[in-house]
Image (cartoon, rainbow, N blue to C red; front, side, top):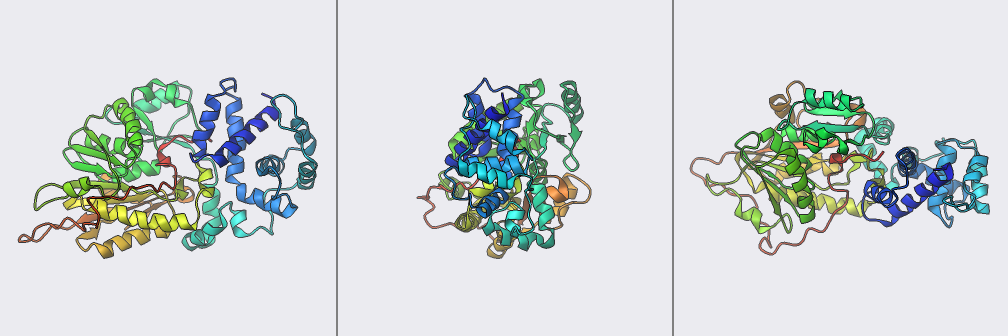
Length: 480
């Protein structure tokens, strides 16, 4: 493809992303799937242009507004032109040659676009007059929340979060070991490395087409960010246990939990989207997992939860894992479009939803069992505040320090905190991730177990319709 044809494709994909409800990687994959003529070398180049605009949209829009081009008839084209000038440093003449209206080329530059491009020529993406949000490529409304968490370190953390992610793989111990996987990947011409923290992790510095490899088709490896792997390991699910993955999605955590259980015991994967559980079934079969039951729920208050709560000394589960829906800030490296898909109202709704999901899932935990709460977010409101609020509202649970769980499952010193686990790209080289663990206290000998609050309307659950971010993006391969 010519440079102009690649630019035209990037503009088309960005326009489709703006119109679609699905994540950017899915939109781009569908675009390429319908255009098989786009070559293997062209696709990464097009994806790089797309993701450059998504990562740096705040800074690009600041420049467009400053130039007076913010109200242009085609903002997508203006962003692409600005990115070519300010990020790639393409001279104006080359850009004009690409936008010539020829076959497969973008339409000719308008007078306004040409003027804007000339004025931006020779400039750089960052400018000293930029407000902090634009300079760090984050939405204006989120900047105060992130500044509260990181303070003076905000620039460092956001720079890492705004960089492309590596491709992390998890070795499936049901099928083999990490040494075998490393050897097979090297034989395929790749350069794998062991991950720093996860004993099952392998890292590739860039995205690779692993779906065609025998070790992927056989189930020896799965795509899963290292932070997500660590969260599943910390649960401490062991052979013979009864375990629930309460927000299973497409099954990334389910696969990891099943592997530590060695296919022995009972693992129930729950989700409100039956199609996600169906998709998980394909992955479970490939991984050789046989101890998983999939259960579609109508909401977090589905009657199934009440029926499976512990009664006296009977029933309940040893581990209940809640990978809660969240803003997904920790996955911006691979899902930068998620920055622009939410607002303050979404956060307010999510905080309520997370609280309700956690409270309902807690009903399933038996005395002595553990509840694991995880998000791929960075905000206190979705993380520490939720954990502390849960403990205040549930005196029958106590905090289980994550440092203790780390020593029991992964060994060594926990890198991300004592009470809670908090991981970031800048600090740990992983997606941003949070984990809190709670243990249900044994009931007094003379008392019956009270299975937690019984929310009003339990028998007529309200549908769970909120879906604010791509489901479990930390378990998916990055496009760029």
